Image (tube, rainbow, N blue to C red; front, side):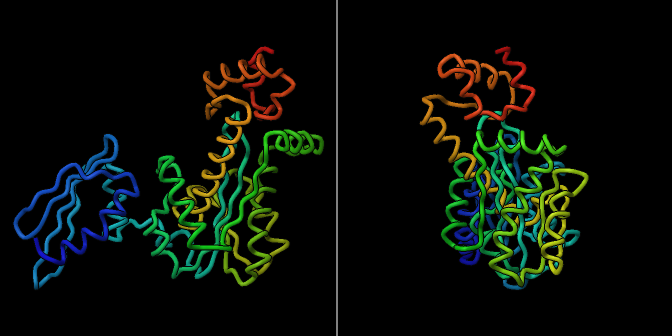
Length: 306
């Protein structure tokens, strides 16, 4: 195996493992090496070749519908790169924001914002920043800690406990507002916390949660010189992806604290397991304590039959 291929493998293998991509087979082929890769049921093949004339060449195989293949192309070939900017923005400094917990009956609502510059993108990719929904819990913890360690002062999170969440929802309803208004306020809080410290930021990109783009409407009047984009699938942007990881990390941390505090293991989501767990909690601690662990306005509350 050529030395240049060995050097390249030493660089990419840790990155593959960070993303939960397993190397199931490795063998030498003519002029190079072949890696068989998998993540769950999704599979792909990476062939690496080296010649003095062409240098290092990479060929990625797999089904056209394979998400793993698409991710490898983005990561290794620079094709379909979700963080390259086209269709999103071309700023040199910007903030991305995302939230976690709005669909979970148990636990808090978390909002996070992350500031980055274009020259930091390679390092963010290297430590494994990606849409949090693509990362397992172990990777969420690993990447979040790397973000806090390597990018101090560039992140801001707000944790809304279940009790506070229920109070806010009640207050918002009294003035004709709803969950989307609360989410807009949350995004405004985390973003403004960074903008006040970094006033020369060129733009803000927000993972859109409503057609009304309410977060943008709150930010623009206070920061008229900042470009604000609120759009769906914003996790394609690396700052939003970083924010989504930090929100998920903080959510998991708060859920673990709740589990220890109440001596239970609270399930995520809003399904039958959640209903069973909520009933057990009410039996053990009293239904009046539900406001400390659940989001009461969910339809799930009526399904408890308490």
